[in-house]
Image 1 (tube, rainbow, N blue to C red):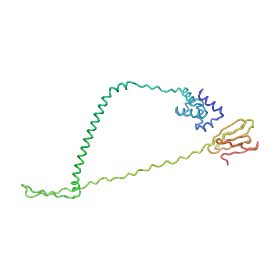
Image 2 (image 1 turned 90 degrees about the vertical axis):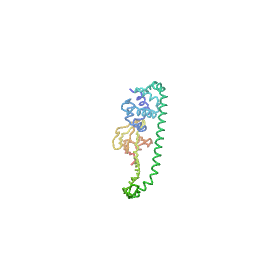
Image 3 (image 1 turned 60 degrees about the vertical axis):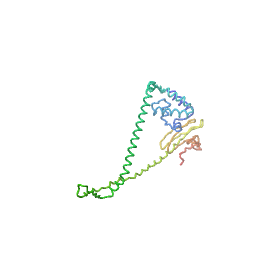
Image 4 (image 1 turned 90 degrees about the horizontal axis):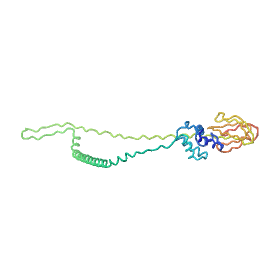
Length: 275
């Protein structure tokens, strides 16, 4: 028997809270609350989620969460791991401090030298390209250039040479990239809030036959006696048929609605939401 689960169950029952009501108010599924009270931790999602359930359920019941978590760790056999730190690495690192500094120094010097050579090379290329720009422009604009060589002492006449036509190479077109807008996510519809119906009869007030239907399904059909209380959950609607409505008290989502009827022994039909 789980000591943690027994403590949770006895505290809940002493406060007159049903599992269905606790599940609605803590937002923890009823099957997980049952697993907690039975100590069946293997039916719960994982250790991290289970610790959150224990803390929230304990705070809901007014119990100390730290003591509950300690009980959970004892029952699951969880202990904090011991961390062992080796000291051999720190001793060996002292011997490599000086070589590391020397290595960084020489690498820095090499990088500075490479940057200087690269900048010098780019500077020479830029100056030569500036000098060749007028000649390149003349070659592009001219279709055919005829060059006449002046005669020398041994030549009878000058030589006329035809240079080939130079066709400029077109530059690639620049394509503008338009960013695609990110679509906005559509809002998620908010689900309907559950309907919590509490039906009870005061002690020594008598009894009444009841039929309770939640969302069209029969959830309760028997005679309720004085001092008894039941909680029902629904998403859309609740229907109650009472044989003695004058003694049946009803509460909707925590708000008292009074008795189902005023005439003892006269059956009535009760709907929520009202029709």
